[in-house]
Each structure stands twice: as C-alpha cells, then as structure tokens.
Length: 65
Image 1 (cartoon, rainbow, N blue to C red):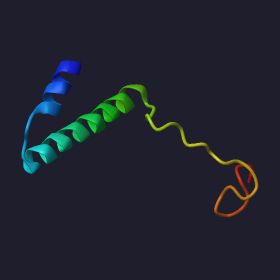
Image 2 (image 1 turned 90 degrees about the vertical axis):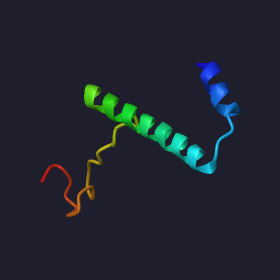
Image 3 (image 1 turned 180 degrees about the horizontal axis):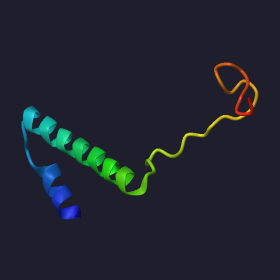
Image 4 (image 1 turned 90 degrees about the horizontal axis):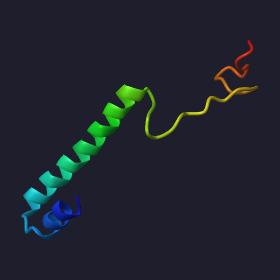
C-alpha cells in the first residue's frame, strides 16, 4: 500500500485532477463508513448517550412520566 500512495504523491496533476482524486478518496471513506454501519448497526462516531433524569426532555419530566 505504501508504494501506490508514494506513487500518487509523486504524480504531477492539475487542480481539476487533484480535486477529482480528493473527491474519490472522500467518497471511498464515506462509503466504507456506510457499509460498516449497515453490517454492524453501529456508527463509527460512537453512540449518543441518552440523558435520563429531571429536565432531560423538552417537558422537564424525564423518562418516568
């Protein structure tokens, strides 16, 4: 993997080619994240913690009411 990355870094390219390569890389990362999320049911960003207790809901009661 180091050789393709080194080759890519040494390649001269126009601004348009650079932006296209960058967009492809971002799409690849986002696609991989989506596939992991679909397979596991968990996101890479971690779980959101649910607030419990007085004042945790918009109406101030929490879960028990």
